[in-house]
Image (cartoon, rainbow, N blue to C red; front, side):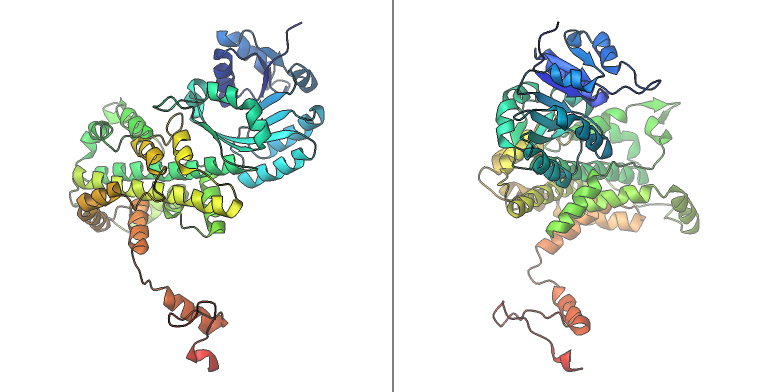
Length: 468
């Protein structure tokens, strides 16, 4: 008989397998579970144990009750399953087998509102439920992921030391793992992370697109490599420079990849969540819509034949590109952190933005010099844009930013995120906007009322057109 496992991990897909190996490398005894589907998924957990030496002490299960019984109490079970119906169906089978005080963790990309519901339901059964956002992909899960925890704080206290062991460590040696609040707080933070990630990926893609319309694409890979030695340094910039090295028959390999971007829903969730909060996450939304537009390949080909673009586009230099890229990234991160602050206030989570930045500093897709800067910044400031660093960046780059936008329009090259960044910043610094016209229109056709600037704010007024 094997001794009891300290942890159970269910779901031996790419992420579950990598996370299991990570736990095992830290000396944590494991029970591994994967469902059995005849002819499709058979002895999956056992095959993983045989394949990876670090898992040779783990126990493999296809029987759910045997899996649960093999784990010492209070049980600690980490689910790494596809979000949605697969996780819901599994929980329906698993929860009756658990005991009061057991800790159950959902590490999938689950919508935070679904996590809220599950936390409430399982709490009634005495099960301590955590929703953990796990970032870093396959490599992060294996070498150290970023872990964004929400749910039952008592449950977190039980598992946090082990989570600290497997999590990534930032430059100061601090585990990239933190508790952010009850219910769906962890999955909300992960959702915003993914929204920022969408925009960061799109911004790099826009740099690539602008380079291709000039004569810059032949030196883009080396330039991105050099940018990554500056304050622009990021994981996404690093991997883009790396992938651009690859060629096939003398042509950059990426040119053979169909230009239709996929998405798994988290960008749409982030955009919808911002809408429900009344927060303008314009770069996330623009990045999401850019992916949607990319999927209309046949339409784009048809319209490209109908509406020609300039045959001799204006030249764009790398200096203009870098300044615009850097400023747009600051706006993107500002929107992400402001969205977290808005959610924290609405949901009563009391999110510490410096802790969020610390968790994002390693083991995740958006790790960068800018995120490292945010760790210190948010200990004393509340806004990325109200800092001497941003003022300095703006002073040196605003002229170039505007010039690049003009050239992109002249060349008819789409840069939705860079344009969204400029529009947001321009709107943010407009003390008196044109929204008074919107309010007047609403009152004219719907008698919604408006506030006058020269009268008490609590008194809704109607315009002289009300008698029409």
